[in-house]
Image (cartoon, rainbow, N blue to C red):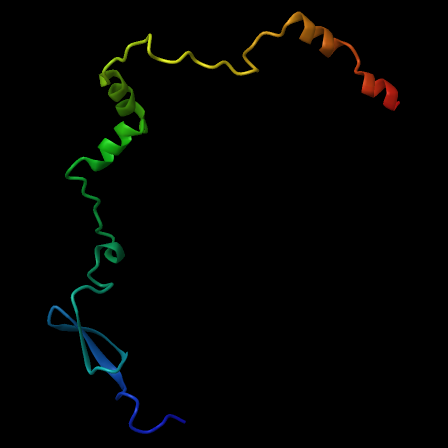
Length: 118
């Protein structure tokens, strides 16, 4: 059982007020709760939410990181050209390299370990 005189008064039908009108009732330690936004007028819950990109931040991000279809292709063409002599040479992967004659012979010959394991 609760100790007497240490708990706040409980109001089982506290009024939640938004813009001067009662929008719902709930249990609280205050008889009235004044709120600015609730689920009945918040754009996320009413389905009227709009994403405003007034400063072009999304477009700037897409251009900067090369995401997005046609916009990224035009953004790449607008970048200043760098000196090609200073650019490092592209690194070829092992899959792109042509096999050497020694590698072809090694692949064609059965391995010694396979022969001894049998």
